[in-house]
Amino acid sequence: MFKPIAATACATLSFFAAQTASHVSAADYPSRPVRVIVPYAPGGATDIIARQLAIKLNEAWGQPVIVENRPGASGNIALELAARATPDGHTVLVGNVSTNAINETTFAKVLPIKPSRDLPGVTGLVEIPHLWLAHPSVPANSLKEMAEHIKKSGGKMSYASAGLGSYPHLDVANFLKANGVQMTHVPYKGGAGQIIPALIGGETQFTMLNMASTLQHVKANRIKALATTWPTRRPEVPEVPTVAEAGYPGMGTNAWQGLFAPVGLSKPVLEHLHASVVKIMNDAQMKDALAKQLMYPKLHKSPAEFSRFVDAEIKHWAKVVKENNIAVE
Image 1 (cartoon, rainbow, N blue to C red):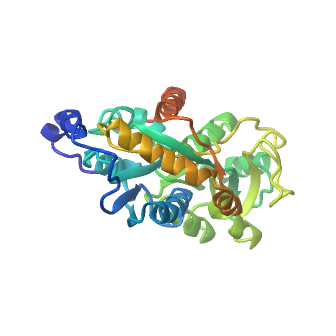
Image 2: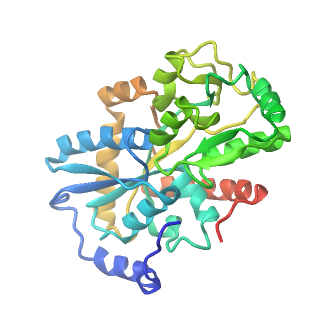
């Protein structure tokens, strides 16, 4: 478990942010290097989009934009670090459905910040198709066959996730519950960057991950794809059925990634940051580059619109977390 900051610091977080915000101006923003915090190790989807965005922001602003990977504690180390940063736009977070929607419920009793309050949204970034995956040695070529194999194994198999309460954890938990079977949960603090080698090496046998991180391994037969969570079959793997075709409609998440900033950021700087990011994400060259990595822009017209979207996601996942009795005391 991560080490929370001092209680007194948490109590003054919002007050400090509010006091600082009044001194922030968009006139010379950014005036120094910008830090982009990523909650996972290099190699996963969140890291990929953060680095793509950082390159383009550097070109647009003429200031260094530095990606800082801070994995651990299901993304909470990065959440806390970003929330404690001075709210002047020079520290932002690329988070996702796990860190900025699910963690609010899962870690409500131990997380010293509240993501929806202390890290309001700037805009969504991308949505990514996902795959249900297995180690090649598993004698199953569909989700139904996977459920049967898990049952026959007597609970001796394991599945990977990006951490307790992450969406892959919850999605696999829902799958197991729907089939009345059990597996051992193995969380990897580094996200896909650590899960993929573990799955390839046979340390774990089952997971659900994004196509951006896993497609090359599927094509090389290092990982077996059982189904896609995308509404339609993917042209990259036309032989892989959708979850609906596989008999599990709605099973699995096409995760979103988004940009967040510490509470208290002045409105002019927030609007400037939003406009800069949206312009970059809407650029045809950027869209083409993202599409090649199986990422598709999911932008919002304003920070307020994105925050409303995240709030709705928090409510949705709170129900899933409670149904699976997943919480950290």
